[in-house]
Image 1 (cartoon, helix red, strand yellow):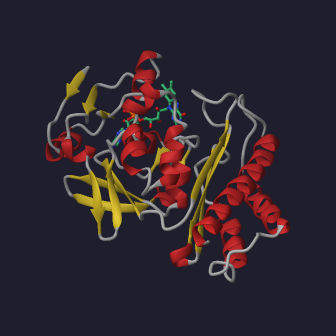
Image 2 (cartoon, rainbow, N blue to C red):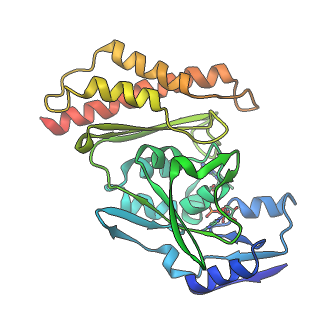
Length: 288
Ligand SMILES: Cc1cc2nc3c(=O)[nH]c(=O)nc-3n(C[C@H](O)[C@H](O)[C@H](O)COP(=O)(O)OP(=O)(O)OC[C@H]3O[C@@H](n4cnc5c(N)ncnc54)[C@H](O)[C@@H]3O)c2cc1C
């Protein structure tokens, strides 16, 4: 097996252009499992861990541009206040070892419907930055996934970063698993309140062929919150209930070893209600 180990982004993109079949490897927490189980035997691996540009993050035009190679642990430590939803999801990923190696870029690269970084990125209206030797493009994360483990990433492209507005309101993430750690989500849900734009963002994981937004639920809640942003009182129970039902109705889960479709829908409604209550009481608290 060829092992390509570029030390700059330009060299990495040139290598991907020359060897489009080369499999990028960042933290390796998905790739190495596939190699170990002989599910994949690529002719070449393209190691991205020496590329400094992928490990950087910083502000850009009022948003944050975070390199694809920034680990979960760094998201938690360095970006927890700016991207609380993503940090919350990152805390639930694997174990300390996995969070030290694993990256959000790798989660996007695997494009699993169960990837924990995806729901908070959806709820925060993030974009994924893709680059090749011909230049870079940005794709809204909601349009990045095309099917289970499939995305719009072209063979000659790399994921270089994701670009996301820093949180302007409370963000929450919750997931259901068969135990508390080291488990693939049975389903997950992220919610972001965006008081600045009077909007609501959502992200559903593990309950459809791709991670997805619950758009009808977002619109419903936006309508209900329209007159409440400035003087946030209690949210009526029927509003919370309806939000949960709309989130559950947006999903198209399947029965599999981790849970049934019915269970996933019920659990999603619970997660949606719970995260809404948490986020709204945070918002009320901030307004006092
Ligand atoms: C024990 C264990 C527990 C886990 N727990 C969780 C969990 O709780 N939640 C969760 O979501 N995941 C979990 N995972 C899966 C994995 O850790 C995540 O998907 C992680 O984000 C992968 O990141 P990585 O940097 O290790 O990716 P890698 O394994 O290096 O790569 C993953 C995929 O993305 C591609 N890729 C990587 N970087 C790029 C790039 N810059 N451009 C283009 N393609 C790229 C690779 O070619 C590969 O297809 C777990 C894995 C293990 C082994």
